[in-house]
Length: 72
Image (cartoon, rainbow, N blue to C red; front, side, top):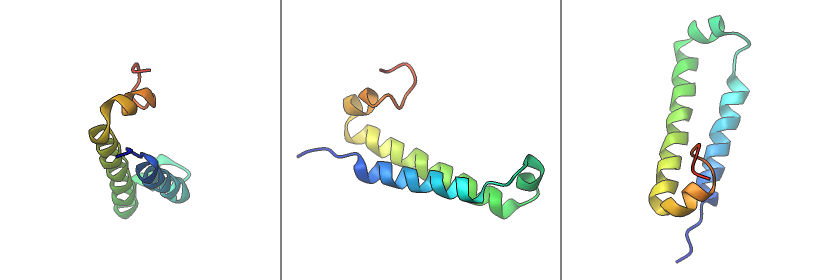
């Protein structure tokens, strides 16, 4: 069975795009909005979960992707 990272990378990219789309212009705006904070943190969690799934799927290939500093 071929191990494919593409679906995980797509979900990571979607989360990055969502964070960029709702990113406020300054820290004060971000800190004043608990809903925005929750949204960004949820997307960061999605990114972390997908990275963990990729690593679980094939640790050697994951490390070869250079996603972890110092593993390339």
